[in-house]
Length: 69
Image 1 (cartoon, helix red, strand yellow):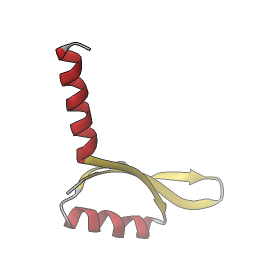
Image 2 (cartoon, helix red, strand yellow; image 1 turned 90 degrees about the horizontal axis):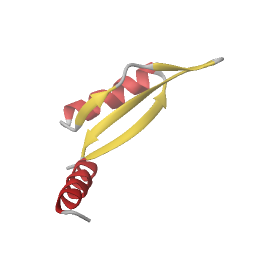
Image 3 (tube, rainbow, N blue to C red; image 1 turned 120 degrees about the vertical axis):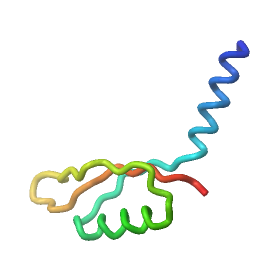
C-alpha cells in the first residue's frame, strides 16, 4: 500500500467515524419531531426530502446524516 493509499484510507475512516447515516420511516408528524430534536441538539447535518412509501402506506421515509459526538 502506498503512502497516498494509506492517507486516503485513514481520511475515509475518520469521515465515516464522524457521521451516522440512516433512513427513518414514519408519519410526517413523527418525522418532524425527530428531525426537530436532531436539529436542536446540533447533530443534524443533512436531511432528504420526504418520499412516500407507496401503495396504501401513508408513511414517509427520509435520509438523515447526523454528527457523532
